[in-house]
Image (cartoon, rainbow, N blue to C red):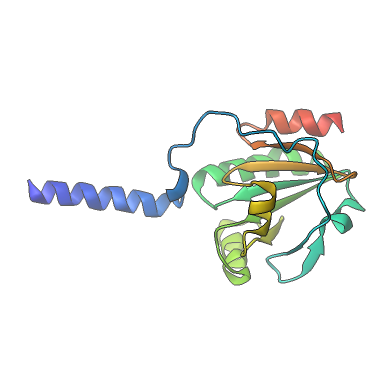
Length: 171
């Protein structure tokens, strides 16, 4: 009996470690609050995984909007990111898609995760101090669209991308 219980505990522990989604294994189907939609954000700077600094204003000089996707590099996030790669990035060249790694804790770890997961074709923000996570209320799967006027047009979970497509199409 003890051996079976031990095996079960080990199996559950391994599952938690493998998924990398420990903080949100059972996400709610409730819609995230859209209180920030319509809010004007201040310009902000950020550090990318290649250790360069950039800003929202500089990204918006060459794009109609910036889409920030908050990733934990877990399987759910990877599914969303793959969807962004296949169904959005090429079709919406005037939109700047950037992933935000808010869990790795350092620029080196962000770059390592980016390379290991195969997303070198995207810029990834190393939000090692959780500044963006805190200021934009980002969490696993949060997708935030900021337009050229620095107005948040969307702040919700990615799901299948239908809401994102509708927002981008309306810009």
